[in-house]
Image 1 (cartoon, protein in one colour):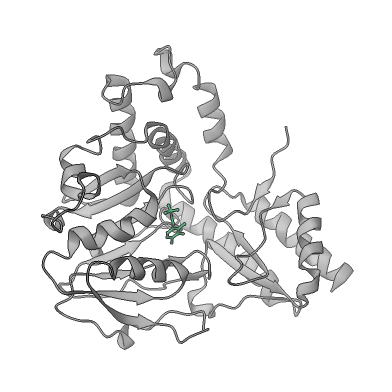
Image 2 (spheres, protein in one colour):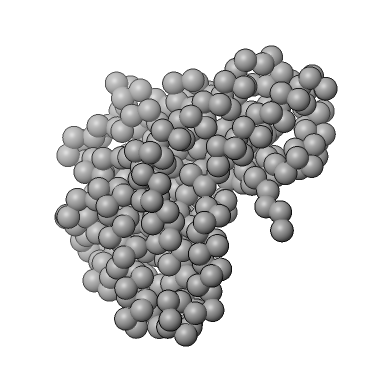
Length: 359
Ligand SMILES: *Cc1c(COP(=O)(O)O)cnc(C)c1O
């Protein structure tokens, strides 16, 4: 067996320790005589797994008591609809920041249900975020939605927007658990699991209790936060195996010093790669240095005709899934928590060597 350094944006690498533990527990979870996949979600074994995972997540993110944690299905994309369906609550309009591809998708979904006020955006073609002082906030908005980390463009907000009494909604899919955040600043945060939490198929939602009200008329039960909260994420069969694996990841994070330690490592990993890009005339990153992502780092080669050779050489060196998103071009290295620092060093070494040979 030889494992590669996988720079995929998602589904992405998982910590090897977690995969080994899951393998060891696959056929017989802790003497139960069955796999977690075969357990009733209402049995005491799975309830203990689910409860522990929530407790560990609450500890890692320091989630205040007046927030609910949900383990749902449907991906972050379902939250693009669930947020307006549940949080509009009679308001005519919601504020959105538009900073990239995922913001745009969230905006398009909200437009099915209400007016959208674009409260801030980077100028067209510029990889940046609007400054707080430039936001055109509507004091009567149902909420302000933004994307703290744009996975495709590689843009990360260096600040949390200040919205007064308007609840803040954030799509944390590609940056959750990469560093500490102050949950009390948010009304709701959500994240698809397949980037920095666990396997695809699980969606995490953290929701302030006072926002759990009646949704738009006609909202399906499965898309109603109140139903999911009342059923403790078990209104229907939850994604049990994903929930279990996420729990193993949370324990791995705790063993490794929690999110403060992760932030230090992530800053260092990103620094290695940005330094390599910036100190070369051959590689370039299009993002305003003030808001460069720690998690997703797009970069281009001076000559796009060399892209295919770069990718082939990287693959030979055990560095895979580096091809950039088609909308940005070039390369993209996604370096979530599970990417070891050695993986980033191996990429940098390869880049230096490739430039020497072909640049
Ligand atoms: C990947 C991603 C999504 C889409 O997630 P799904 O779980 O596939 O719906 C949404 N937002 C961001 C920021 C992402 O990175």
